[in-house]
Amino acid sequence: HDKDEPPHLTLKDDSVPTSVNLAIYDGPEQRFCPAGVYEYVENDSGQRQLQINAQNCIHCKTCDI
Image 1 (cartoon, rainbow, N blue to C red):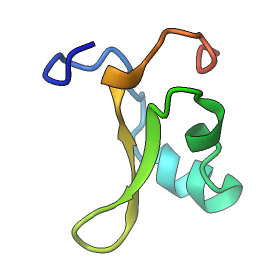
Image 2: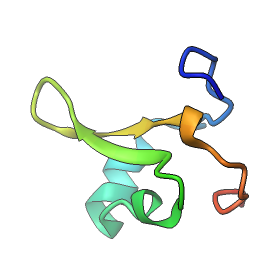
Image 3: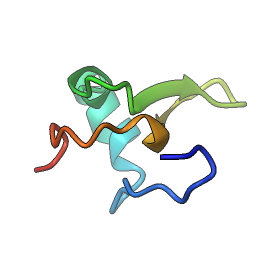
């Protein structure tokens, strides 16, 4: 995927990664993806947020639940 393409990976609720996955489980999605698609980065206010690097996706289906 090109960097400027619309992402094919989307979230139903974009609050879940930080309020549940990161807070309770330390963000497992950043570890299970072999291509580094899911990454927690610090935003302007110093809080961590999930960044989806869809251009890295290799369609391995690891995240397909």
